[in-house]
Length: 313
Image (tube, rainbow, N blue to C red):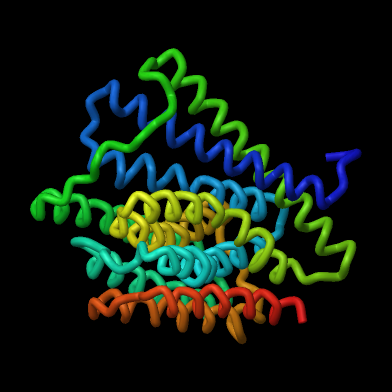
């Protein structure tokens, strides 16, 4: 976009992504309420997909402009940010101790998705057929989780929305949100690639840091709100669900859409192992019902900041 510098493009792109995601989620929740869609189904589909739309928009825009490193790096970096920064922050405010039912199931899903990610990164390519498989696995996971939650009686409470309960407002809000997300993604990718070119920063590093952090801001906001309301299960579940969606949904759809994604060699040498170690640590803690306390949360946030510094050093 001519006339706008790379820095302002990135900032405006971030703002549009966050606002667009909020409009889509709130509009969709209102529409679902008017149509009598069960709250559980809303939580598993509309809200989960809505908060992941920024990552999807950025990934698709990146592959459209032949910037595969930003697409893959954005997912890798976003998963590290979700685990270390978002969950670490939740732990610091005491919102990661009461995780509720279903956390072991979600933790196991994160472990399985991370292993699939490790395989494709080490292979150096995500072929279209593997992208289709990832999407099918994601659908199967959602169906299984939905049925299990209904059987356990762990229904998701109705989501708060600031939109008036009118379809004539909710539908335009959802459409406006979608436009803001795709426009924001276009601006963010353009600004990020321009920044990388201007300062000689590899696109993979930009994807792992700037893009990943920006697209993780909605998850951070949702987690903080849930934590402050004392909904520890929502806070932790948001992080786990987002990581599964990032790997299976975002990369799976991007690979299917583009005919395959090329994975940069540096991801296999360093960053995938950061994802495996951080996700593996948190998954083990949650699966074996170990408490993620405030001190550990502070250490996780500090570790994330150190990783960001290492990327640029």
